[in-house]
Amino acid sequence: MTAEVLVVGAGPTGMTAANELRLAGVSCVLVDRLPRASELSKAGGLQTRTQEAFDQRGLLEPLLATGDYPVTTAHFAGNLLPLVRRRHRFPWRSVPQVVIEGFLEEHLAAEGIRVRRDHELAGLEQDADGVTATFADGTAIRSQYLVAADGGRSTVRKLLGAEFSGRPGTETMVAADVRLSAEVPMTTITREGYRAQVFPLGVDAEGRPLRRLTFGGPGWSRERDIPVTEDEIRTGLKTVFGNRVELVELRYARRITNAALQAAQYRHGRVFLAGDAAHVHLPFGAQGMNAGIQDAMNLGWKLGAAVRGTAPEGLLDSYHAERHPVGAAVLRNVQAQSLLLDDGPDSAAVRSLFTELVHLPEVQYLLDDMLSGMGFRYEIPGSEEHPLVGLPAHDLGPELRAGRGVLVDPEGQFGDLAQRWADRVNRVDTGAEAKLVRPDGYVAWAGDPDGLEPALRQWFGAPLS
Ligand SMILES: Cc1cc2nc3c(=O)[nH]c(=O)nc-3n(C[C@H](O)[C@H](O)[C@H](O)COP(=O)(O)OP(=O)(O)OC[C@H]3O[C@@H](n4cnc5c(N)ncnc54)[C@H](O)[C@@H]3O)c2cc1C
Image (cartoon, rainbow, N blue to C red; front, side, top):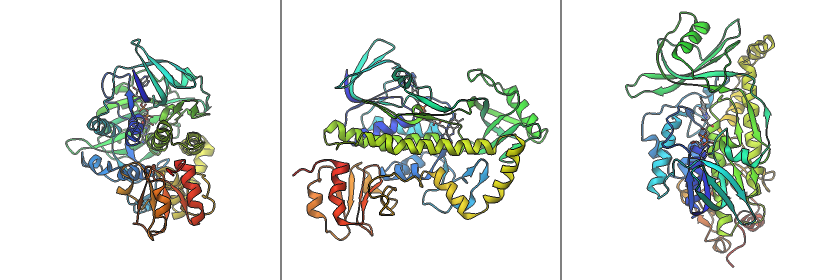
């Protein structure tokens, strides 16, 4: 079997990548080793930039129409950031990962991309022309490129021998979806060093509040694969909260590790690591899934251009150049959150100082820039000269639905130039200021008119004429 691009892993990253490749007109095969969709409860939060990107693809409204997903208050290590709630058009929302995955899978199916389940990638070889992936059942798929979206324990990453380094895990904690008998504070650390965090996770079908409980502490760490029991959760609650709260219902539980690791290279020839395959960390601040979706948005159109033969020199390498620093920044802020939730005596002092600092609007905005995905600016040519370049074009919506580049030309002065890239870039006359926006929604040029043609060449390749 052949495909232009093979996407391994049908989690949020792989499904977003498949959708982007579809928009780019590329034939893509999406495989997953699971026989059916995962029911694991993982991410609970959809960050601002992810919502904006989904909105630009026309996916946000139908996704949010599938249920009741409340706006929640973002937090950093349990410190609420109420001032950022009204900062963005799309504030942080509780949407369970399993809902997002189900929605994306249905959307892809409606567009003709069916997840090929029971396909466990087991081998990988690449040469100058393509990649051959072999599966546990002995079948093989040959493709021009491969996207490894196969999660934190990525088989592809291991087969590549890719460096995956950072801070190794030193302990595990329990993460559980629960119903509790009473309200408890978001963050509690006992004198003995036991820690619990309790976050809202929306409501169940009967409208009862669900919560994500995370707890750990001295002697609590176990091997990751040892199942979490209901008794363990009850003991954990008692250890941290005494008799203040009881477990009413346990929906789901697993162990998570405090490892913070990142692939040194996101590109390995024709193979690209994305999502958890490229970066893993504690789920603090609701960032992993969101970062993976943004990886896929960044990579999809670039691979599309490479397959169609229009990719300019360096376009595929820009995936690592742009997304690796974002992954590194996420890991840094998660490690900072870990330290703030640590049980050491010095951490208590830092925590108390931080609790004061976080009342300052500037601090809330800075932390929100990190967590929401809105503050990451790609270092691309022109980003030092113009305040818009390298940032998402927040004012665009349906203009980006087709997954093509967009030249915003309010005064109609760039018609002739735009015509030369008309097969890759749409020209629109909405908007206040002229700018060139890439298919992933990031501004590639604004300002000096002489910079437009070089920017078109840099991001979209040679013109038609
Ligand atoms: C308790 C918890 C809470 C979290 N909360 C948040 C949150 O609020 N916000 C947030 O953004 N993130 C959160 N995360 C992180 C988030 O769940 C992950 O970052 C996200 O799942 C990564 O998506 P992915 O598609 O990259 O990988 P995954 O979701 O892991 O998907 C990988 C897919 O690849 C498949 N696969 C694996 N190996 C193979 C193979 N060899 N062949 C074929 N298929 C394979 C797997 O079956 C799987 O379907 C949380 C995680 C946990 C555990």
